[in-house]
Amino acid sequence: MVEEFYKYLKHPEFLNEESLPKLKQLVELYPSFQTAWMLLLKNLKLLNDPEFDQYLKKGAIRVPDRRQLYFFLTGEKGQEVKTDDLQIDQYTAQSAYTLMDDGQAEEESLANLVRSIQKKSVNTTPTETSENTPSEFVTETLAKIYARQGLYKEAINSYEKLSLKYPEKNTYFAGQIEELKKLID
Image 1 (tube, rainbow, N blue to C red):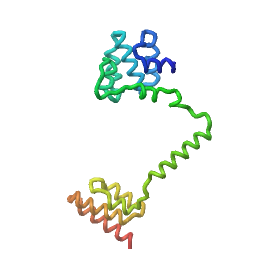
Image 2 (image 1 turned 90 degrees about the horizontal axis):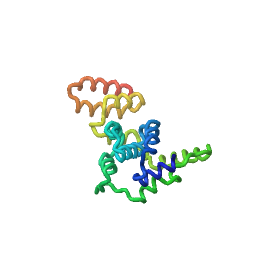
Image 3 (image 1 turned 180 degrees about the vertical axis):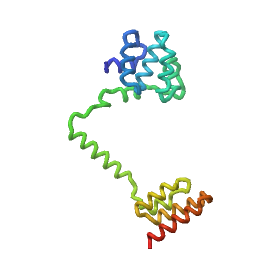
Image 4 (image 1 turned 180 degrees about the horizontal axis):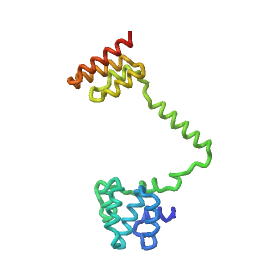
């Protein structure tokens, strides 16, 4: 089935009555498989199947770019949609998606993932985070989290921003600030 799927993907004109039940089964097994939905809809359209409208309603919500679906179904060349053979070959090459059989290879890939995340992460202290946090992102929950973590200065800073943002709760925030100042001393 995999080879057939690649064939239909590269040459949708080969879709016929034999491919229709296979694609329906594939879509039932994997309802989020966007490419299968597109091929199923194309197959239904080529066969002038009466179920086309019903499946189009279901499939259109699963395809992220409806313009691409439209151009694929009608065969028109859209300016925004570029389907050159290089892109199709890149995504349909059987070597592009491989399953890991070896547990060690999986551990190595996880270790590489962790290393790449660590390289990209930026070391910031909580004080820097609190001072750089825009007032629209400061919430009462964030202030409570700072207080529970023992980051009293950050919590006080958050409550001060909140008292400016919500003057009607100024008394409540002032009480919270006083409680935190007692904990600092």
